Amino acid sequence: MKRRTFISALCGGLALELGWRRSSAAVDESARSTAPKKSWALEVADWKRFEFSEKKMGVPTRIVMYAPDAETANVAAIAVWKRFDELNAALSDYDSESEIVRVCRESGQMGAPVAISADLRRTLEESRRFCSLTGGAFDATVGPVVKLWRRSRYFNERPPEKILEAAKKTVGLDGWKLTEAGVETAPGVRFDVGGIAKGFALDEALETLRTFGIESALVDAGGDLRLGAAPPGKDGWTIGVAGLVKDGEPAFYRTLANVGIASSGDANRFLEIDGVRYSHIIDPRTGEPLTRRCVATVVAADATAADALASAVCVLGLDETPKLLERLKNVDAKEAGADGRFEKLETILYRVKNDAEPPFTAEKIDVFATSGFADVAKTR
Image 1: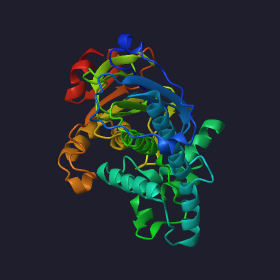
Image 2: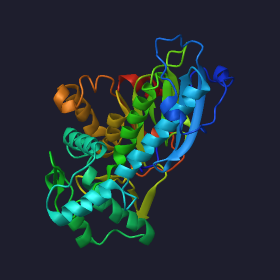
Image 3: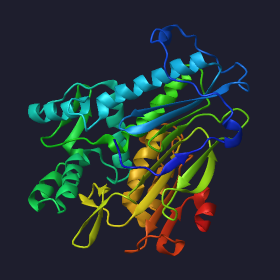
């Protein structure tokens, strides 16, 4: 549902991990309600590694978990896949029958609130929160503008200016509101929660695994990650983070646990018109695409926050990102949405200088990095 991301995930102690048995996700549906839940109080040192893969929300999705037995792992994986499907049905802007598309259509016509599911409400609440926190650098109402620029890739021309200006006027918090009755939108407002939905789904996936007593897990959706507790006997999950120096290859590795990780970037998706390179990433504040290649990676306490902030960091760039991070340090729990939500926040942003072309050497790239990324940034 979202832009291509640039993180690859590798389990800690990979050479040892390869000896673990992999299990198929195929299992009788009746097992879902009868399989006993396992307590984390059980000895976990001997739990085995299981891995499952499917395509969900339009991207390759992977679950790596440590579970006491294949039955528990299989049933837990089925529950996660079901949760992804539920969220896709609610949040996809590509599906004309999804809840979010239907709600926008009905509310715009009725001029009155439309009842919404708990999943859509929570996603829209987070969307409003991060729009406010980022000063509009993340905005779920940018959908009409994004669709116009998608059209441009087919016709290789800028959107018609009058139509683009009309679409820009639908972007922003003033065009919609949440009430007890549901969501109310002005005519023309269309949500695109692709910049946050995948992170929300990853958080929900990990919570689903925890209901089966599974704490040590990794869920990867198209490169964005939600990490649970470290694998047994390890300090964390070893994650390869890619930059612009080596296209598609990890620039460095981090060992992390109990965080969300997301990347946003435009190294490979762009449009060139009259010598100007237009990114697929749109600045919601202007309705215009970015014009410099960039890749941002964000680590946060949860994947929802990491997802939304990765998009915002690309838009804000090298000058405004430090100001955003400073603001986030000082928000209270109500504004943040959870107590201590931004305490683990880390960011690295690569941006190509001027009109530099590949191969991208260190001299062609500007970097902003917080302390957790600072040492590796100096050498990449």
